[in-house]
Image (cartoon, rainbow, N blue to C red):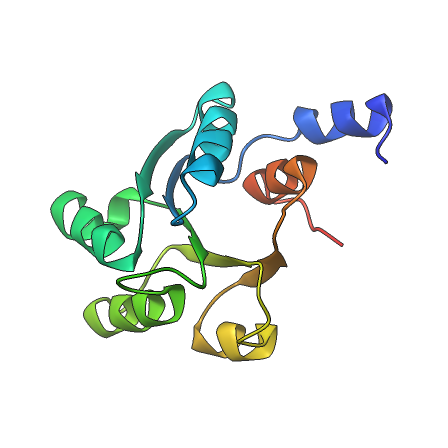
Length: 138
């Protein structure tokens, strides 16, 4: 468990990312992460699956986002297919992080696709804040 001094030190670090696209079929995660993004003053969008995320990126432009956080397992279009399609359409993409509660794909497989990192669900909220601030996580 992190003490108050360690938490304060994390919160002193400026945000690395300003605009996030969160892709997850669990609406509760969207609400929790959204509250954190909003509290930190970040601009963010939520997509319930990879297809909706591609639609958002098509409408708003991929360059408007500097981080994508995506679940791996989702209906309609999963995270693996979403990242694959995203890379087919764009030469460069924002930093991409996977969250997963399942072990059907290894972190190595997902990172070989182009993900910067893979985190297990449930993600500790201070770990999320470290990610958003660009602080290395354990």
